[in-house]
Length: 266
Image 1 (spheres, rainbow, N blue to C red):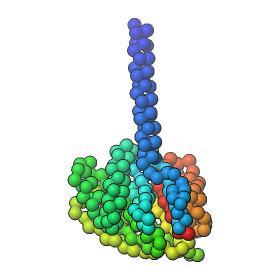
Image 2 (cartoon, rainbow, N blue to C red):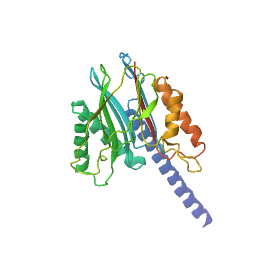
Image 3 (cartoon, rainbow, N blue to C red):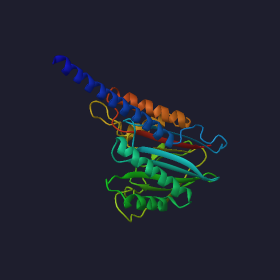
Image 4 (tube, rainbow, N blue to C red):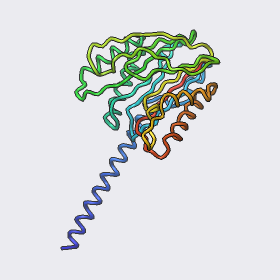
């Protein structure tokens, strides 16, 4: 009898291990698929010397809900996206991929950022039974002039540094989150990046990174880090920010996805 029970428990354990292995393999594949959805080859535009761009996303779990994107709409216009989906894990990752595709597709059609966000919101609200939402900052940089037209659907404020200046938070007007309500209207606004200027975009995983005593990294530390190294290239700046966050958090587990994008005009 004891041998029968032992064999049964062993078989049950082996099945559980196989199932765990299968889930791990699927999550690993999902991680790779999600990473491949984001622009991840740098330098991104080696033939363009007017600007330099770099971005990164470090998920808190195997897959994340944050996403960034950048793409040439035409030879003189660069689309820039930073977004954060509600929730975490696989549901957020699926919603992230849908949102990214919609923003990209509508932006490539040439509409203003506000119009693009309205169209994306309309599509997502049609079948959003799980009531998820996504915050999105969308900007279009006119490369020849440095003019940026942008719209903000409930996302973090962008941070801008003018040449020979300091990084400062640009307090734009927030619209409502994407997926939260039908028939929302968004507003475009403009600012100009001169030669040598830098734009830094991020999700709340940066200022809300939390250490063991529950203290947040915060926007003051974020600005301090940026202004300690104001002249460095985008890739180095993002690496320095990640190092500063990791050092602050220490051994505490990562609470949220950590996503950043930086573009600097030559």
